[in-house]
Image (cartoon, rainbow, N blue to C red; front, side, top):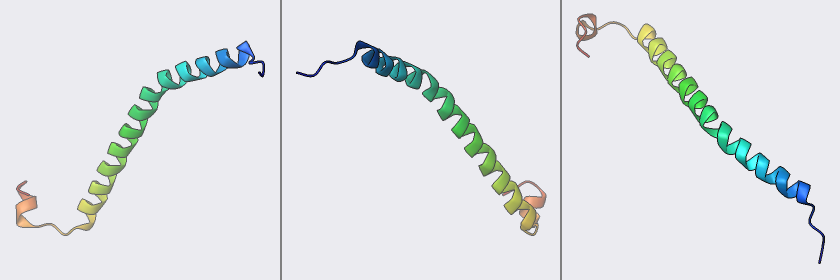
Length: 60
């Protein structure tokens, strides 16, 4: 049977702990970037769309 290095097991466990700790931060950052890009796209579409009477008075 092959010898398993304890340091490699500890390394994998530490990597899993750090990965799960960082994952929510990454998900929040991606969600914020997505919302920002969506807002920017809506703004660009709104700028390029000719005004209508409904939009001029805030009734979309």
